[in-house]
Amino acid sequence: MIILRDIELRRGSKLLFQDAQLTIQPGQNLALIGANGSGKSSLFAMLLGDLGADTGEIQGMNNLRLSHMAQEVHASDQPAADYVWRGDDHLAGLMDQLAALEAREAYEEAAPIHGELEAIDGYSAPRRAELLLQGLGFAENAATRPVSDFSGGWRIRLNLARALMTPSDVLLLDEPTNHLDLDATLWLQQWLQQYPGTLLMISHDRDFIDATCERILHIEHQQIISYKGNYSQFEAQRAERLANQQASFEKQQRRIAEIDDFVRRFRYKATKARQAQSRLKELERMQTLAPAHIDSPFDFSFLPPEKSSDPLLRLDEAALGYGQSPVLQGVDLVLRPGSRYGLLGRNGAGKSTLLKSLVGQLPLLAGDISAGEHCRIGYFDQQQLEALDMAASPDLHIQRLSPQAREQDILNFLGGFNFRGDAATSPVGPFSGGEKARLALAMVVWQKPNLLVLDEPTNHLDLEMRHAMELALQAYEGALILVSHDRHMLRNTVEELLLVHDGRVDEYQQDLEGYEKWILSSFRADRPGEQATEASDSSRREKRQQAAARRERLRPLKKQLEKTEREMARLERELPVVQAQLADTELYSDARKSELADLLRQEAELKTSAEQLDQEWLELQEELEELEASQDCSH
Image (tube, rainbow, N blue to C red; front, top):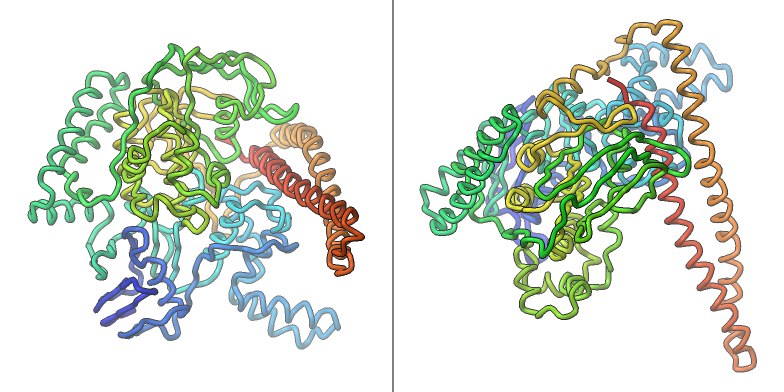
């Protein structure tokens, strides 16, 4: 049992906890929720021993094995699977001892280590690590690739796999689904349901919380309030409590009226009876639970598009992909005002490829794309966060989009995204991932698009912002095409589902629950010894042919990647030479002004080229990963 007693914690001038109490029973699965900055990560840091409370005590942590998900991983040449299983320090130590003893042929001394490895199932560790990686969406060949090969989001997945691999009594996970797609989220959900220890998880994915947690810990007013049940039950309990307090009654009634109106409109518009029934039930539930979100700091909506076309965008017999390597073929899709599509499909199946093709980031390899005269696309993916100007404020970002807009109108608009006071006028550089994501979404909303293309828009967003976004999307009058691992978001904002699978895009005839069942039933158990049946000779021959075709598709990308890496290495050699020359103090005399100017120009050019190559390398790497991952797509 873990007990937090009379905890007080202050970070800078902000009081996070005051006389906070908490008891965690062995084997409980707990979700930790609360507003951004309320103290969730600080509570984790206290449990890990990285941060001490100002007053109070934490009992029961002695002799517990803790595993936690680190948020960063540094580049290294270590193979991915080795990085994962070496999260088990005891196992890694035994393996290193064994290697050292066998290197000097001390076989008798090595015998006890063999026995210990057998006792802890150590010999199966590499295979277990590979299965964890596959469950989290990595391609089969990823296990042997160095950690340095992977981009940021994939490195976070490596950390998650490492945390799951590490034997533990208590597992601490901070936003584990943030960089996962829906299939990997479902796999992780299944894994956590079987975890025998104590789970404490920070998450903003309500369906994921509902499926994995039995109790909610809500940080509010410097206290940790424990609610029995999952997130849906917590929401109902909190709604009842706030309704009883009659807090913000007028705003509450307005919000319920808005949802009422949407229910009425949807009831007569929905075409798929099965999805409509599920959707209406969910919306009616939201009416009852509206009070639980009265104190949300978010309040925004999409303004009606100024003009529109019908259709807005059309794909005919399109082949989509990278270079000369199609990922999807024969794609037919018509997006009209009011279209609401959710994209389903395994990691690497081509969902992001389809979205990038729709918004013009990828040229078609074949077929036609045509946009209506008044088509205005609002596109969001995680790269929009990287495109923000770190030195500019949210206010300035919006001003650049509309130089003629009134300052007060911009500030009022940003207030709906909880950018108020200094937050609206401060540089975004120090902002959290959630704040940057909110700003990127605000910029999309400001431009009044009539076609929204959203690729995992909920990453980094907290529960209240997700709820506000759902409400805004429900009232949105344009077309929507959405990729999200957040099932609650999909269920409440889209009307039709498309399945991206086996190089095609087809209408998915079942509902989201049907897709979940299909995916969950297809997962292989990740316990050692459970193997799939042997494929037939013809199946193996077909797999060899497919593998050869994949290698052919990957070859030009790999060549380009190698060329880029060679050029990067050249710049890495040349830049220090120029910088060493610039360090010569005599260079700054009047007599050598022209030489100094020359060297400064060279340095600037080398740095610019290095940045461009670095970006090119990241894009090529992502393309390569997507093509490699596509080999895992199967029924």
